[in-house]
Image 1 (tube, rainbow, N blue to C red):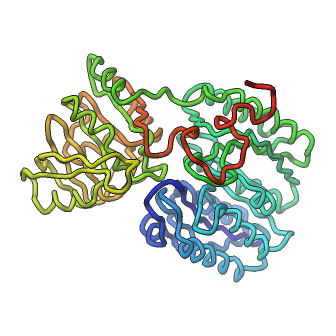
Image 2 (image 1 turned 180 degrees about the horizontal axis):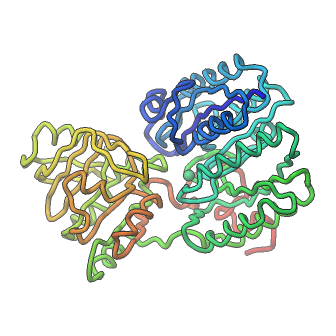
Image 3 (image 1 turned 30 degrees about the vertical axis):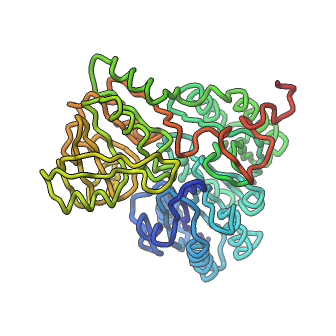
Length: 488
Ligand SMILES: [Zn+2]
């Protein structure tokens, strides 16, 4: 048996002002054939699993390229076509192939391509022919299109948000593909469109219970795999939105019924699944009222992990205006300000313009008279076992606040973000982050309270306020009754 594995992934926020080019992929993660590390990345885990299974099961694995760009704005046509054609060429020269296993994200949009992954897997199918098995792992913040369903035999999404199970789902997708190739199973893919755009974190109820119920259904009565496509509302593409995938061992009717039941159950949870968000002022009031710190406040809609710049100043500006002290901000992305701080040196006092340099949706730059407290070339933070580069970084202080400026866009993951830049996170009353949910695991261990702030931009966070041009309708919450159930 001959198996080909590759990975091509990013998450495109089509509203982000930061273009994604070839350098974005090469600079974030790029492993040509045979060069992939033994440890998995979020979207390339199937490659690592396929390697191990090749050794255990004795099949021939041909590795293609694996690459990932930090989420940002629309991918250049040249970058997408170059990387796509590189992997297609590798697959073509590996023929004949019995199985293709792909690590995708599912929300990549390029100029000229609303559905990059659909285009990619259609071309893979043309190369390997109808007899080969093609399986792909996706991030749940993916879109789902007919083009993908036509080309793929097996689709598996991570179940957890935060994505703690990406390696487990990689095991699943590889195993299902191999079993299908050996004719041990005959997968049938059933899909139900929930027609909804909603945040579905699984670290809290009601999604925790929903995912646990789904997991209990798998592996029984012919149910091979169930996935929830959460969708990604920061993309104006026709097929954004939540969908359910049920893969059965050739039980189409049962699969369709289960997908519909689970889909309508999810639709019934709409409006109850997300975090409770406070306005900036309510968040400050609540943090000040806490008897002890550190209170962790996170600016959820300026999360670089969702493709934004990470330089929005709405929260910082309000802290300054209200004279709030004893808070540290980690981080505000501003490579230009970092350069100035590094040139001035530690201890320097200087006028500094911080943040919001890219787009009006990020607020206005903040002008301060700052003291440079620390400069760290090539600073890092951790996220579990992985090291996340922050680029050259600086800590500046003014008016009782300390702000970390970084040059490499990254969401806030762990408290060593602060300690690595000379700030003791345990000694601050307030820590202000840029992250939607991935910070939760590490910061919940030190936080006296966690507060999610809706600062109004720029993600965009509320679909009702977005002027979507391509999104298919009807879809909740833009349309109150997309399934025609007689809802008001
Ligand atoms: Zn995701």
